[in-house]
Image (tube, rainbow, N blue to C red; front, side, top):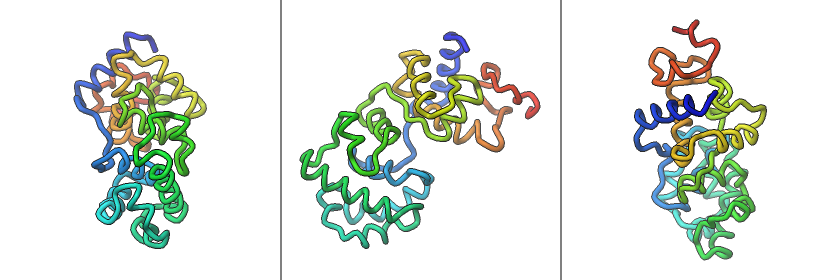
Length: 212
């Protein structure tokens, strides 16, 4: 896929979604970090249902640090792997409170050292909070990048590096959320909605015509 086609694709996506953003609900950088940790192998809807209760009780690293682990578990029990995630957000809250004075670090290495935070979560924070031109490759972006031949790759890291290199610079900050939202609501896993796709004429999905 050449640079002109990629630029047209992102121009159309941006026109369709002028202000792309995460669907996780949060009111601070810390709340987003906790929500993203909880979102691993879980839907944004299920995370929002949990955090609405959690953040009413504790929405700062200091407050979560004081909660008993069983209390945290009870507040997020609708989410998969909730026991492991409860331990991670408790440990992370303590580290942020004690080591970073309650502030979210703007450093990839520091972020990835936090319990429950891997490269994908770190990229979400760097992109969404600090507006860094990085892309967190989730299942939607991985599928979409391979399906339409935007940045084919065998691993999330390979796709991430290709996207970062190939996407025109003016769209890099928004690309993460543009691709997630398009993959979530249009280019879906089981039934891509090619008939109502704004980039259908530009995409290189070989089976799209059979879907029309």
